[in-house]
Length: 257
Image (cartoon, rainbow, N blue to C red; front, top):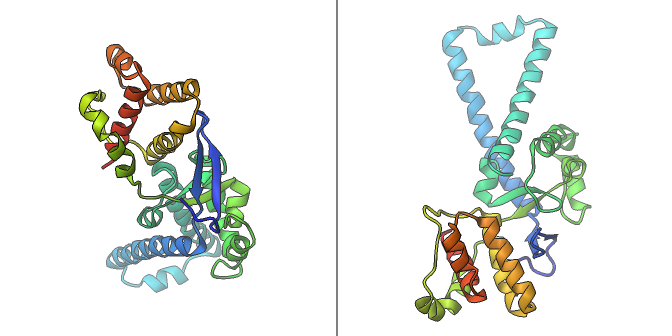
């Protein structure tokens, strides 16, 4: 988790489990932007190379365009950039290739995944954040907001958070003895969970021993039902005891490896 001096995003899940997500700093954001900008640069270089194979005098063609056609071309260039950021964040759960490489993600301020609206707004405002050059407005906004949010993030209600590597051994080692005596039921074809689901499970397991027995059992039951995929008989076995429920959740989190 984030250190005490690092900004963080505190959220509460529907299961009433508190999560603290470390906020991505300006350095992370700049490096992710450089990766994405490099990809876009090579895209345009490739497009220019292909166009030059078809047209001998590329510069002459551009100079021969009317003012309206040049405006349409400029708008099309901007639209390409906007589509790249927006579509990547929508279809890859808040990540572009650069953000994925730096292990950061865009989420709403309540910690939930962003949608088309949030991504479209924050990336549309990217042009304003860029003014007058080199993201000067965006950098000032990030410096003077606690969670390093640029103007686009403030208007879209989003924030960038860092993904953390989970120390699953911390949670599985303590249960090894009981796991030998208690077979774990996993849904058929169960695969890796989403990072948010794994983080939710680990947050619950970390706090479980301090919860009241009834609250511990109810929260465990909600999380099992949220994951789903169990037949009725398997579900009954998993929910038969608190030990079985938490062992099932550990095993599902372990499947992330």
